[in-house]
Image 1 (tube, rainbow, N blue to C red):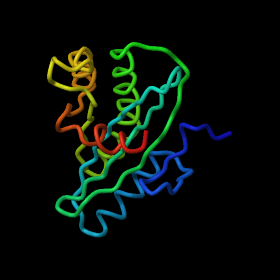
Image 2: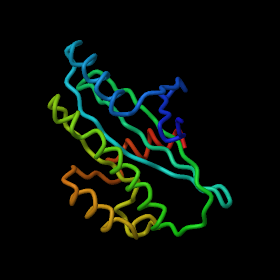
Image 3: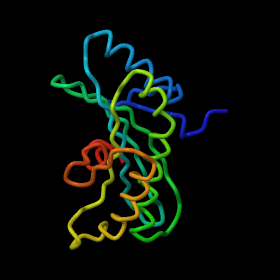
Image 4: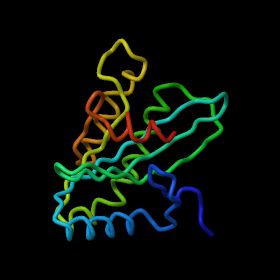
Length: 161
């Protein structure tokens, strides 16, 4: 039985009913065959609607000098949580996907970054999770990016959440 987590889509809403590992490998093979140099950026964002938190995780393929395309996974949870816990949930969702696809990326020599929708300015509430998020991502061995450089979470996932 397929779960919501196994359903990915692109920015136009086209649904892909394949595991993200397969989608990533197929995309890399196609893009490299077309001569594109790639980098993959993974990021998540969330919005709160009453007692519901909606999450979106984006896997963004950046073609060096030739634009980008994205796979998105959406999820919902009924919960009341703090801003710090919600930010760390976003990071956890990103790291989960990064971990799932890292072997495929290594096979094809594709770089990866993990983006956190966390502001580096202490004046913003999300900043309370910055040190924990950075430690988690860097501790997993991934390249870490926060706002304003975290476009996978701050722009791509944000548009779809």
